[in-house]
Length: 330
Image 1 (cartoon, rainbow, N blue to C red):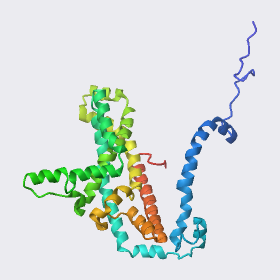
Image 2 (cartoon, one colour):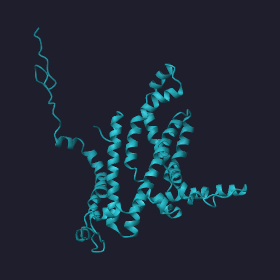
Image 3 (cartoon, rainbow, N blue to C red):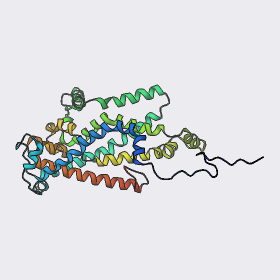
Image 4 (cartoon, rainbow, N blue to C red):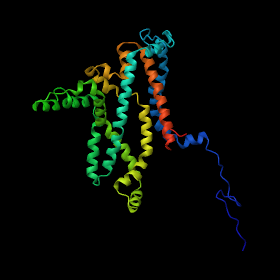
């Protein structure tokens, strides 16, 4: 019998045909991913229109911008006189700006120490609950305040901690002086942090529970067989699984350090005074919208953006040193 020559996958005889190792052309990749590209197109357009095009308006920070020159904002921008670094010089000499920066950093520090760990602890607590129904109810109760507006959240706190609130009335019934935490400048940072924890901790719980769901049960079983108790399993299995998510969210939180809640603080600014409640966002709004000093407010906002970028890069570098990916790879 004659020996048959092996046939290659491509149909030719002899040795199998080698496939090209190069990447697909741009046209082929577009044809392959055209459905996904069309799905993401509306989101890309929204980001370009509302996030990237407004960056061109930062030129106002170097102008004595007058929006009433023309009904067209672009024409007003082109016809407003340039003043160079004058707006930035005014900011650095303004004590109100430094007070707003100090209040912003104080609120960020409190929220980083108190608000950031709480969703992690609550996620670990919920994940330890055995009964699925109890776990679902607890998660729904904690997540519900996320849908409340800040007006409703502040109204709830006013009914509890205000001068005529439940806590103050209870103290008066027992012959103690009433308290009004809602108007106390000394406790205002703690009040803001408590409101943020109550409203948004449930959102963070979902993120960490999703990360916990990806942990293989075999790891817990192997740790239990090695004699590890509940706390040691949490320390050596659960927390290492959460570490990449914690690092990523921490970098994003540090990058958002100078944004500590515009609407929340603006609604309570008059109750405690600008000395305690003025932050960079309200400082920009007050000078730009209320005082019509648009160039000055734009300069303050530009400084805030530059500082935020620096914080993101620094936090991401720390994440790399810890062996995590962070926002982007090295």
